[in-house]
Picture (cartoon, rainbow, N blue to C red):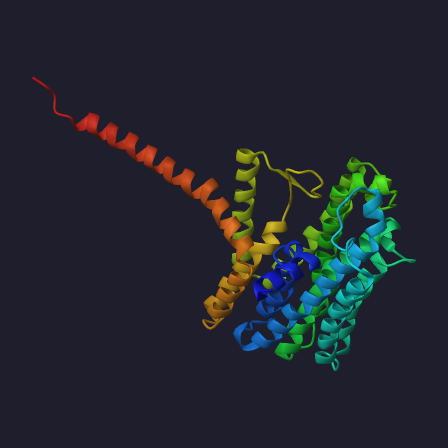
Length: 360
């Protein structure tokens, strides 16, 4: 079996396509934002960045595998496919053990940094409590939403932030930690609520007592709009205000233009919780593409060696970046060129008419 085929199978088992480009980049923003706040370049701390990125991989794999293993019965009741259903008990145990072993590598690396290590371990613990019986917070309403949001965004983001502080040799700023925590947790809650809304019908068939299954779609969306998203927006506003850079603000404006064009041209529905096929989670693309690109461009302008890091990260997460670039080209760049050509043609015809010599 070729190495490419083996890696493809591993990616399927770990559901890498669901988290590599859609979750890790937003977590790495915690590292990039903190170094930017401290006025540090990324290139001198490339090893710390690589360590943070590496630590996220076994954790994400563990989440995917454990969630599938513990959902086998519920997915069968809901007639929903499950990647672990046709695996033997030994294969399931082996996959979980390998991901745990990968996590222990980073436990050893960070063994002398107690707070950072506690945040890293808390992410693993949150997902264990979320998925594994008898606790299985997933089926305990709001507690499940908080556990998933904390495990998916809060604790990994704090791990990245504390790793940046440690790399720079600077003590963490409590206000920065609070703002980053509010932003990350609220964004994680929105992500879980979106996931629960997409799975709501299946959860109702399986009688899984999730937060979204207990309520109507409208009620879940109201909770997000009135309680969760305001906290996320406030946290992000404080983060960007403390940072004081213009590029993330410009990137936010560009993202808003692209999202508005998508909604108008392609009938995509911007939503705080994406539970329908045409829904697109508001700000998701900003955190995954626009914000990291703005941060990398800003730090590279101040520290030229960071262009190398920027290039490597864009290559690693190129699928999301290229998709956004292609959409921008189709929705903004090409229409603008066509409009410019039409305007130039009209102007040329008008000038031609004005300067055309009169016939005798």
